[in-house]
Length: 102
Image 1 (cartoon, rainbow, N blue to C red):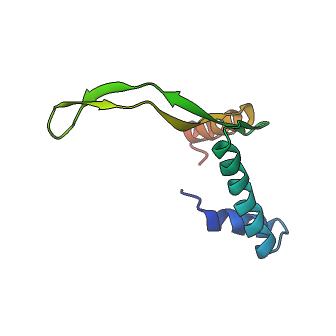
Image 2: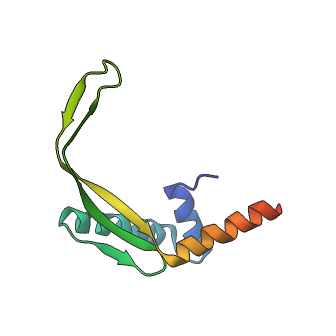
Image 3: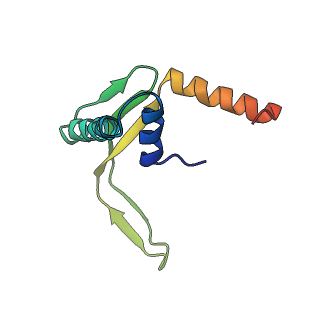
């Protein structure tokens, strides 16, 4: 099941937030992480994960349509490392799925 932004907002509303406050929380959270990445900062949230940026080195690879080698310049990409809490949650889901509880 895919959870979208509107689903997250609805889940916060069910926890007692107003829809306006829940929307603001989600938007501000995402905006703050993006602003920090734009400034080259790493964002670590305990038990959730770590957002940072990684430099990819220049390389050459084949063009899938022509097979001709093309040079790909060095560039930066975003990266996310899941935290222990997130890993545990996925493990619980995996175990429940294997047992047929879901």
